Amino acid sequence: MNRYADCSYCGGEVVEQTIEYDYRRAKHLMVVTNVRAGVCRQCGEKYFKPDVLKKMDSVYHGIFERNEKPQRTLSIPAVSPCPGNYQVKNVPIGEGY
Image (cartoon, rainbow, N blue to C red; front, side):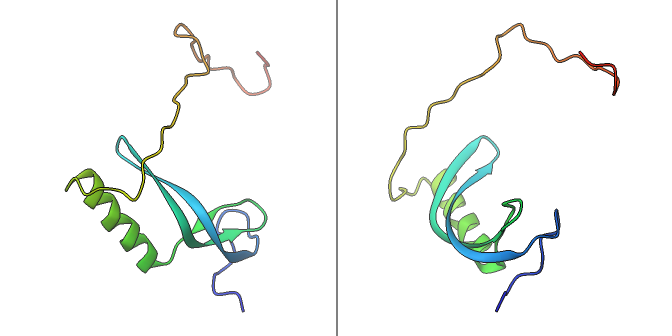
């Protein structure tokens, strides 16, 4: 039995899976492993039940506000794919680049 509604973005079927989730807030990133979520089979959008969101939020505040120790720490490279002088141009639709 599907315990999730269809995807609100694409209308696809949402099924429960155990996933790894990148929880981002402010300037922090926390990787949550082995978390249950509804995942759209079509577009991959993720849905969490309220109790799961509350738990992730609680862990986040513990680590980033109360200095609690995480289970483990990862080293994540950060890169910028664009040169420093790169500028985005507004191009009207249909006019190409």
